[in-house]
Amino acid sequence: MSLTIRRSWLPIVTLPIAVLGAECSAQVTSTSVQTNQNCGTVSVIAQDRPTDPAALNAEKCFQSAYTACVLNTTLTFDVGGTDLVSETTFTLQKGAPCGISGVTQTTIVPARQATTSFTCTRLIEKDGGLLFLACGKAGDIFIPPPRH
Image (cartoon, rainbow, N blue to C red; front, side):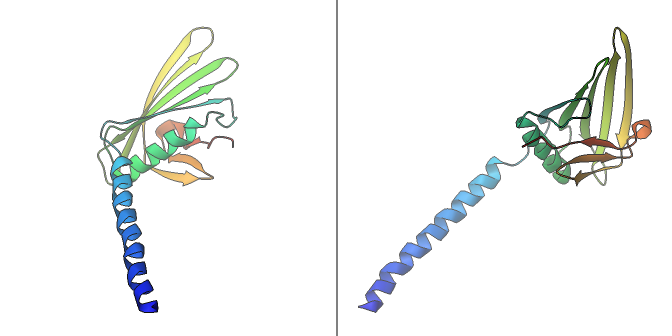
């Protein structure tokens, strides 16, 4: 009788493993990063952390694209202050390691504007956020993770 139970048990155990394998491969396919992807925008006020939960997805998207070096993937980082608004767009470029170019448009209220272009040497994860290293005159640029 125990032999019969084991025989009926084995296919049950084997079936979920096969199904899990199929689900896993489907998940990998569905979360793969696409070329020319816009990962979104992370917005902060002054030195505060982002409050939008979507910011975490945007940061993870860009980190994954950087790891896979998916060209032309973008991430926008907006910083607002009392008399200053800054928008930085990071774009992945061809390189080894993957290249990162950036453009910052800064507006100082009431109407002074400046645009700065730069390249960063690399991107690392730091304290749950993204740290862009050696970005020209801007130096290192840290995008903090959102508050929980």
